[in-house]
Length: 128
Image 1 (cartoon, rainbow, N blue to C red):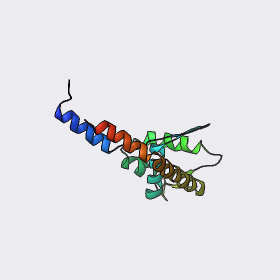
Image 2: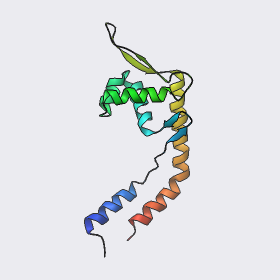
Image 3: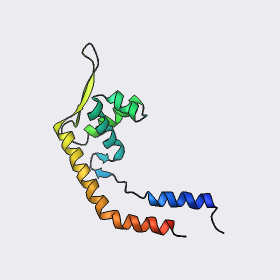
Image 4: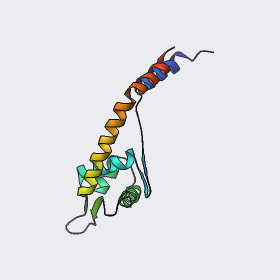
């Protein structure tokens, strides 16, 4: 039995958007797209709360993820300041920014290496 036209159209759209998703598994935990996105947003906003809001994530979850990110290294990757008169805030440390650069380089290398295979997968799923 053949798929309905709307199902075929949906499959074709999905196939054209084939991409690679990965996590780096480390002894102390994992680093993947979610934590990397949180780190980037903290770097942009200077705030864990603002980063969480931008991701539609609870503040409690973002605080947990910041702790998990910091547990990956021997020194913090994200520094936080509690609120008060001067206000709170957060920033990536030099090591945190270096980690993002390394992650970006790995992601670019993996995407380049996988491009031919992703195209073939997309073609295979869209043919029909």
